[in-house]
Image 1: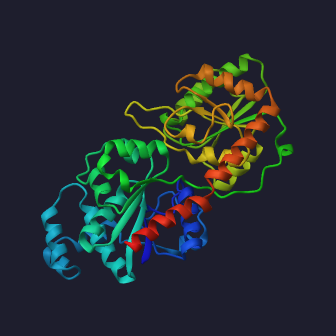
Image 2: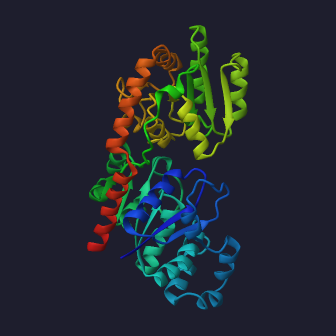
Image 3: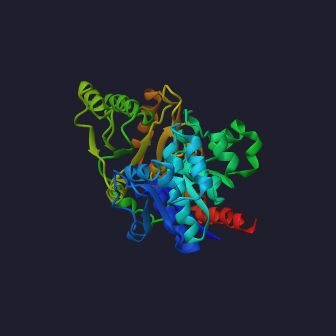
Length: 397
């Protein structure tokens, strides 16, 4: 079997976990084709050069549109069965997924590809669904968070994607349980495989004994809970604790969060670093004392599932304070590797942060326990081996 990866956009700044998986998958299974439907607007410099140079792209939207503008132009490129399918679909939503599948499926056939894997139950998975219908190439996908949890009006539904997939991966027990309850008839093909991370040498605790630094990383959007973190910092100031808080990331709420910091007079305690590269984030993690990410559920039901940055902090021997939401308790063991509080409770968040700020020994004990948990369950070598087994099962059957 020849196996290929398919992404909506690759390599994108937000896909560090995908780089790790593809790189380790290539090590365990050999270099496979990598296809991206579009060029990323946020091109990542952290992607290994070998993966970036191996990635191939489809024609752009306008060029694809020209290929499918009439029956005559389509017949010059595609079998009549595909021409008929395109005409039948017409201008319904998602037609470009069909165009992409018609073009890409032909290329994959030429490469001898018999199975493709994609991330997110979105653009890539819907294109893979069409490739399966048009060319018989099987597919699987990894569902993450809002791509599964939030409904949309696409004609190809989550039910359709799961029904036709050879197998489906979710990145937590929480999301697997959710998907099995939503689509119980397919539960035998739904598996949990965590996002894996590479293991670096254990951090030297002597490097971090300065004014304690609270670190948080994420897009500046509602579900990350940064407004609650700022309120918690205001409470910490009243306790006369020494600390600084660094927030890494950009997003639509940046201005309102900065205004909140100013209104509360926290300019000397909280600073924003904007978007940083993966290596720059790792340098910040090495300097931090506590990692904090008080995730919340958005008004539309959107929420994080298994924020990879929490694992990255734990791998750096950092205690974590977060919320008991979605799959976060699968990473953060309350009272052992950090603390969990209920969402939208900045006072309780401040209490737990104060406990850690007041005790370097507690920080060290919880940080070491977190590192041990990552080594046991979240190493990328372990998680990719589990994915390899799923892919190889496709070949056997």
